Length: 450
Image (cartoon, rainbow, N blue to C red; front, side, top):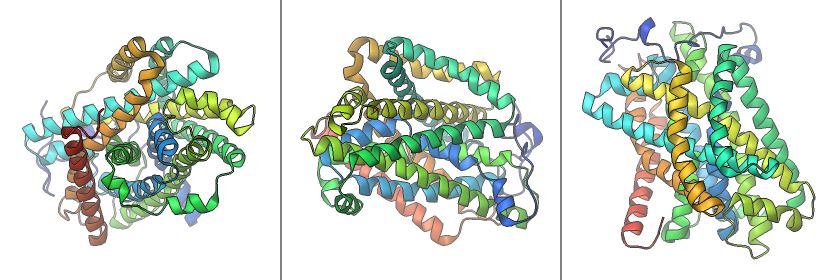
């Protein structure tokens, strides 16, 4: 398929009506005028779609394993990962607003076809790893709450594709409202859990201070990278650059600058909610399991069974499972949207929405079904943590293009990221690459086994 001609700002092709990101909802939401709070409400929503990717079932597995094994130590990793996420998501939405392209389209328009193809394969792999965690997490929640066998739960997760499609056809705002409502349910569940867990405040605060042994201990580094991969997720960088374009942003520089400011405020607030939930899962595991000497709790099902007796609250396990189900349902929204963005952006492959989403979900269901059939509950935690480590390994392949594009004044139409933000993003990229290389060396030496 031939695209429009070259763009005057250095892109290979111009952004036109036939190449809009998420074309069915692009510029579908009108912006409010008037006071600042009223204008901000127009941008309230995309940040929460992004934030749910930072509290998906993969986060649960890594946070539970980290908290039970090492107490509050890895809270510093959750905090630093969240700061990284805030900065990178700010770059992502800036790209969507200033360049009128999502990250997948930008890669296709800037790099040679072979490079773009490799990046597409890596992006698809990251989405499959993300979807895998959500499929397993939702199936586990259905098993805990309703007694459904894991295999049936895994298959049932395919049906949420049609729910998402129906809601998007009713309007993107309805989809955002569902995500925000489910996020509030998760938040409320963990507020109650924290009240009953009564973690030691001093130990919690000291856990947010980074420690050197996180990088020197292979086991701790493995879980730290799992937390990083579960927090700063590659598919969210593609997602945010596309969904910010659902707003009908004016053509002037002032319009775009305000959209960048208000969009960044929305995502920053939403990601602080995500930090609370991620930290709460780890704190719960540290306060309940680690303190009780149960330092090997990594399975979500095991945590469910232990919460009631250890907390002394008859509803703690149910709240835990309800929050997990809300998390799994929420995350499927972003994973399916990301699959659409990556497929259309990189290879311009357009197909009926239900078919595209069913294909991506089926690809994720296959390995989940194999693991649950062969290993049952015992294999799900290892697969969840491994999927998040894979995301961490994939992350630089989305980060490097994003930082390159947003630092380029020509490609960004004069709205390149501030120099401090670009430098911070490069520092984050170097850190992630360095930690990934250390993990690869640890695996090669046999210090860590997947």
